[in-house]
Length: 143
Image (cartoon, rainbow, N blue to C red; front, side):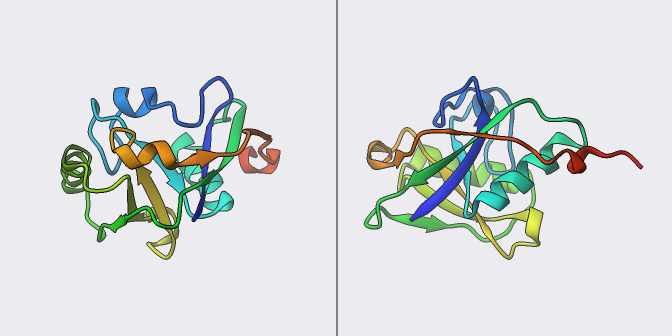
């Protein structure tokens, strides 16, 4: 399976610092996870949504390869904070290295994938070289 991650140019693709410091939909602060998206376009959209209309500093987009035989668990849609508790428990349980979650950005019609770096199978997940991503300036035009 191929997934994509948008991340700061200054951070590695599997850097968990941001997730550790800030909560996300599927984890609480203090939990180390890596968020990825089903498509490159969804990774871009998720980044734009979280920027809240502000200009985004330089980013990289990285293609990640999850081995086909690695178990992927599925999570049904749930609101926060229920989703955060679910994700934290999933990380601690270490039942899989990958959790498929519905993306709110596209009305749950596509998926994001949360990676658990503490799971032994995570070491088998590989990535290509990060590519610099330049946002189209029209995303940031103010009316």
